[in-house]
Length: 168
Image 1 (cartoon, helix red, strand yellow):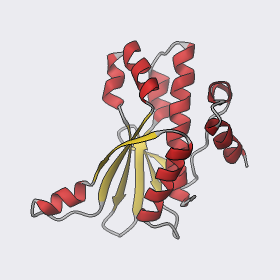
Image 2 (cartoon, rainbow, N blue to C red):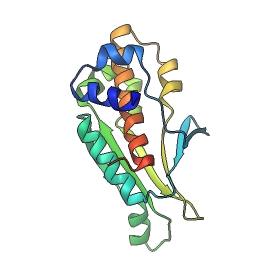
Image 3 (cartoon, rainbow, N blue to C red):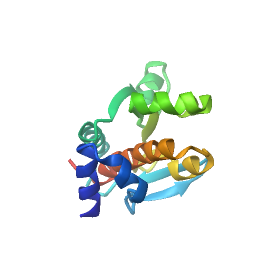
Image 4 (cartoon, rainbow, N blue to C red):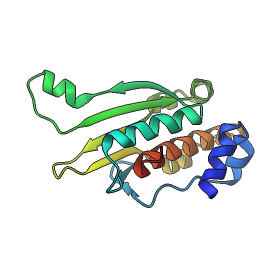
C-alpha cells in the first residue's frame, strides 16, 4: 500500500517533499551485486516481455521518458554471434539531468538512467541497474539537488520493481 501511495503522489507531482522523507523500497527480488549494481530476479510468473511492458507503463505513469532502447543481443546475432537476450532501456527526466550536470559534469556519465534486461544461461531473466543509494551517497549534493536525486532514485526503483513484479 505504501508503494502505491508514493507512486500516486509522484504522478501528481508532489514528489520533492515526499521523497525527501520517503525512500521507495525495492522488490525483495532485488539484491546488491558487483560493480555498484543491483540485480533483480524476475518473478516466476513474469516473462522478460511482461517486465519490459510493466517498466514502460510505470515510467509513463511517473512522467519519466523512455529515451533509448538498445537490443544488444539482436546486434550480436546480426554480426554472426550468439547471445542470450540482452537489452538496455534508458529512462530520463531531462530537466533534472540538466541541473545535475550543471552542478557536476560527472553526472553526465550516469545519464540516462539504465535498466538492463538480461537472460542468463539457465533461462532466468534479470533486471540490472545502478545502485543509486551508493551513488547518491557519494555525490555531495546541495539540498535541492538531493531532493531531485531522490526523485530520480525513487522513480527508477519504482520502474524496476514494476518490471520484476510484472505490475501492469
